[in-house]
Length: 247
Image (cartoon, rainbow, N blue to C red):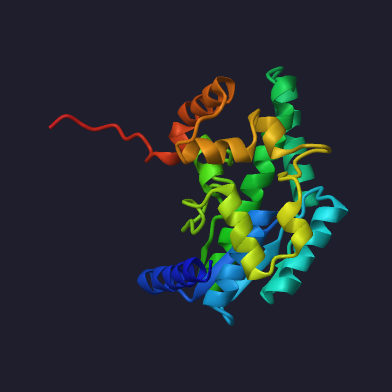
């Protein structure tokens, strides 16, 4: 773990130097991945890293966990509460759809959740511009492979330090870095609605996805789910399609 942490920290410093910026910023959710990134970027840039709490109807427990991440990592932090912004913006969108009789109720929950992620991304980039920082993403290997992130939301970042680490490897990094143990062990959730968990949404577990990524045998049903998620989310990982003019 010490070697891996040292390599990631040096990589973060190299990325900042190559980009000609001053430091790094990350959104802190109270979950495992953002906790690990917070610790890593604070190690890389003790005076030029920023962790941002971005509550939008966020549960008290997750907000408390985010504050504990700030304390455990020692990262400089600020809070930008976007709850009212989301409420007003999404209400306006729904009103417009209702007026045109094009509102699709079964898409309501996902659309509102994706808007949360994109509001947070926009806020992080506004802050990054102010400080001349880069935005650091928190996706791990399982999330990246299955596309379990919002395009131009939590998937909107400049660099991805954890994208080749399985969920278990991220847990191991967290334990080494001193992330509070209850955050390491908590059930992964984007806190998008009451009772929501990552694994319920994906239909399989992180441990199973980790095993698949390592080439291990897993149940056929889980394999089909993982491969379907990967195929459907290909557009999130690939460059934007571009029309090519004939010469």
